[in-house]
Image (cartoon, rainbow, N blue to C red; front, side):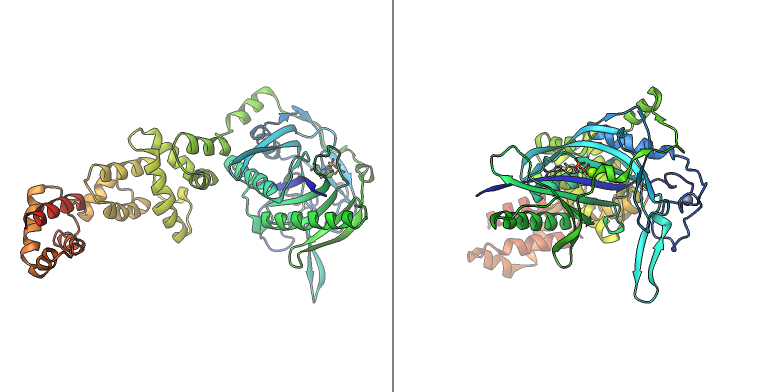
Length: 477
Ligand code: ADP
Ligand code: MG
Ligand code: ZN
């Protein structure tokens, strides 16, 4: 029998606010254990939460960027459960009225456009972290307790690990475009739970789902999904049935094990948090949030692919970086350079420089205007492509214009045909051996002679003109 996998994801993203969601403690990652804490986030009796407005703003922003309806009036609910990393024994989350509902995220898988609907996005507080230590036993660190999260819950619209991966990548890119999450996977800024079921191919009914927790990387999600699909098929093929349960994915042993059997929403005894009032997003605020949504990654991708004539890979690489794509768009908007030419610089030399120096574009002095000038200087033959690379390095590091750098480094290309012809003749005169070889049919000496001409011009001769004049002189022999 052939099976179809059905997958739904619950994605958590930590929001990059300065302070926590219900207190003024820092939300920054990596501080000494239990230094970002106060009576509110350590759950002291009587301490009262005060909502951080930025959290609502960021959550609504993600909702608008994913086609959700934003509920202009929403509230916070208590989700009750006990675990040592949750000192209040309840998490302040949202239950029946989440901030955003009914969205849809588009993405490409092997050149094919797909989508996955979002059931909801809600905001909530993160729990603390249990640190297991051989000597001290288990220690609980409350620094993460109260760090704001948004949880994005999808409909079960995905059908393979590849689709799940591209969906997750698109969520991550969107978060980075909106600048609401630092997207540092290694710090747990984006985590997801994966729900998997299988059904006979062609069937419209859903099978029983298994939820897997503890997934910290997108590649881990792919491994967990592929493992679980295979496990369920094996169970069913052997005449068994799938139990609704939560399993823990172990990305080292590459297998999952049962954590607990089905829990229901009922088990959490959700109720409205009596310490918090409803949140209203008025028209003015809503418009402000709306005005902050940039062009979305998928739209950029499609523009690069369809209008700029770039390959899928190039378009994807540019889309992935908000700052690189913005540089490209600004350069193209000048109308002075071909978008493809600007993209080539960004994807090759500019990316290489940034990688080597471990820098972000915005932390350098390169601007779209400078890049445009550089490309124009090369197009006009004022400098060679090789000289352009030297200029680029300076553009990153100094306030000078491309012209000033060319002047300072003496990189102007000699395109004067008279001057180059003199040079070509000198080179031919001083290389009689090469001329003999050329006459004897060894046409590959041309390359050597071009090199000699470049050298004689101190690297400033226009290579096209050197090639042309040299060919002309050789032909006369
Ligand atoms: P609960 O409220 O019990 O957590 P939800 O309906 O919220 O259940 O579903 C949680 C996640 O499980 C969602 O991402 C949803 O898309 C996914 N899901 C629901 N049913 C299935 C199924 N049969 N197979 C795979 N995923 C599913
Ligand atoms: Mg759920
Ligand atoms: Zn606090």
